[in-house]
Image 1: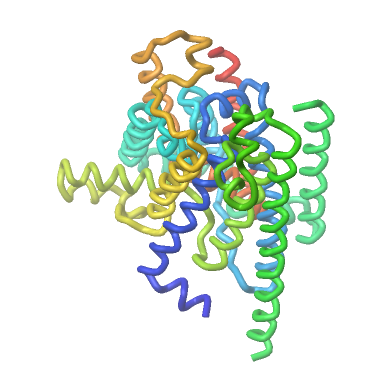
Image 2 (image 1 turned 180 degrees about the horizontal axis):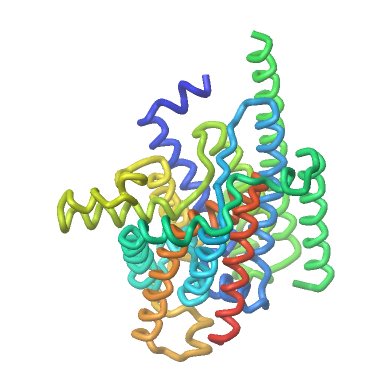
Length: 185
Length: 220
């Protein structure tokens, strides 16, 4: 049943759109489409972003791990290396602080009327992606292979069972929440 | 046969869990509504709102409620679409489509566009929906306002629109390069990848926030 659903291309486009509506709605209600909230996080004065992301990770993980275990869903792990994930995320982070939105929240910001995202951020990201398509062969051959570790997961890395790893991450996230709330953020 | 029965039983449990969690999420903002206007919501509006509609017209939810919503949404993304939530590939495809319309099919010969063929796909529609969802949320809360300068920016750097545009645009370029270089952004890595406990995604999340915090502290 699910495989049939996955291969129905037109229905998938509709599902993508519907899920996007929920995604945008939650992001905007969580206030993480706001420059002030995102920059507040990077300036360590407002921890809304950390709370939203960690709750999403916690709730998401507690759903998808059991589903994968029973073979209902497949994971889509991203292979990584120091040369790709490490360097790419650092470039991204610098841009994140300059723009004050990330790609998803920039689109959400446009939805709430933020013109700096519409005229500055979105065209910038599109141009940046275009530049990357030009430099891609060099980056792929010369830089991305450095420190390759493939589709490694935390349970494999720490050589523990998936269940244990999920519980450990869940406890750590709850501890972060406890600290944030006690500290008054 | 046995496997599919198992799947059905699991699906049932899954949907029951979803409904329970959604009711919890509905309860959380109601609590927040009862005790605080810290998010800066107008007290009159708070008083007027109530029930399901009030929930949708609130200016802001507790970050925990919004995060839980996104978490549950990602279950459905895996289940119904076999796809994690992600955004930045859609930008690469948009870039390819735009450049193709300007410069013709030769653009598609690039290795990158052979691997990520420009076109409208699930993820592109997700981003289109994201735009509409954020608009809907802001509009329902009477919170949609056109503005070029965020308050925090004006407070720190004054009313320089050109300067803001320049930083936003150059930041966007770095994000576009960095997201594709690292194979994902805050959604694909820091949200969907981390919940699968992928090492690459936890590294990406650390890199994004590490470099972001360092740059922001230098800038402000």
